[in-house]
Amino acid sequence: MNASAPSEAREGFAEFLGRCCPGISSPLDRAEAVALADLLKALADPARVQLISLIKAQPDGQCVCNLLDAVELSQPTVSYHLKVLHEAGLLTRRRQGSWVYYRVVPERLEAIARAVSP
Image (cartoon, rainbow, N blue to C red):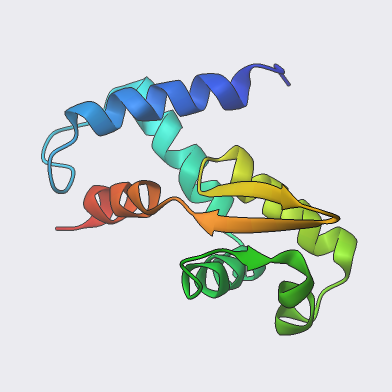
């Protein structure tokens, strides 16, 4: 796998966002389809969807320590899912001491909603 692939996918998706109108009103080109598919793949896991919903419920950010019990998964598993969501651009993170706090990137979720709306 190409190490720059996630970055290229984000750049392709950013271009897609710049041109996207509500819903997919015209066929996507290959780069747009790949970028959107990569974003949807990041959400294609029940644990990740649950993590997004838990983090979104706390606008000031959600500490990893609070997520572990809520999703009933091990710390390494939660960290992996958070990494996937962060690399897809769906989450931002900041370190505070030994804890990491995550926030949802609303524009990314809105882009998904626009892309799949009728």
